Amino acid sequence: MAVKVLVVDDSSFFRRRVSEIINADPRMEVIDSAVNGKEAVEKTAQLKPDVVTMDVEMPVLDGISAVRQIMAQTPTPILMFSSLTHDGAKATLDALEAGALDFLPKKFEDIARNREEATSLLQQRVLEIARKRPVLRRATRPASQPSTGQTASPSGGVRTPARPASRPAVGTAASSKAPARFTATGKRYQLMAIGTSTGGPVALQKVLTKLPANFPLPIVLIQHMPATFTSAFAQRLNGLSKITVVEAKDGDTLKPGHAYLAPGGMQMMIDGRPGAARLKILDGGERMNYKPCVDVTFGSAAKIYGDKVLSMVLTGMGADGREGARMLKSAGSTIWAQDEESCVVYGMPQAVAKAGISSEDLPLERIAERIMVELNLK
Image (tube, rainbow, N blue to C red; front, side):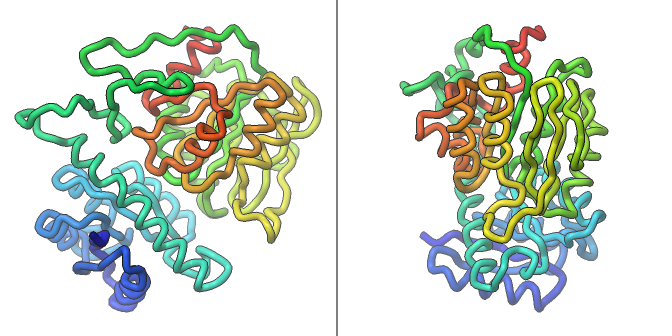
């Protein structure tokens, strides 16, 4: 059955353009459109689409308010379209925090190098987030309905009973049992590194805001994000967190209790030696698929820090991070992956898990707790 899509935008031109792209893929079908947020809320409740594409700025009811209402009344995967400006970045981050799962630039020429690539990317994003619809609906199942043995997680995902796995699937015990207790491995670390993509802004916020101000390690963050978004995102994280979060700059010295977000459109590498390491911010490179790229930063971390890196690959599309994580593991460092149930898109974490690189699969809501235990902070 084709994925049903509701297209929401006050521009008839943009509605038509998005609809043409979606309908060009036989796996999807635009079932209707809406011209403002109020109409979007009403049609989502009436038509129950699998995915909603949503503009940020609209009359009557804006996109962010519409997202909040849809997620409260008829939880549905939502893909936001926004302008690549600082204000657009702030609004998009607000929409993601309200419950939207992903976003794309409204100007298609900003999405990719050519129209064919942009078309394919939009189609792929819609199909990927459509997979979360059953999870969103189950997470808000009325208490009167029969239990399926699953419990809603704070991340908006679902925890299922523990199942056999080749490595520990931590924190997935059945709801009748207490969550699994973590145990520190006893390893010593000098750096923490986190790579993520689709769903990453919310995931990083959930992790970083739980860390104490005296966090003993520097942190490098690699989030696939446009250049105009990373500054606003770093400011948001800094305002919400006890640690200091900044958009990384060339020459920054890595300090404990500081998190450095790789700037969009660039590559972030680590140079120097442990205790006196600095960041190198380089041109993104025409041939690179990801700017920033998790593999690039993870690989440089492996060369400088060896076995002293605590690294995580969180929700995201594709396989970026797998080869960098492989280098970290070869050097003796620790790699964790976010578990499937709590991911918006189980692509990047699945890549490291299937390759046998990660040592633990962790639900998003317990990653900060796992970090604290590993570093003997509580």
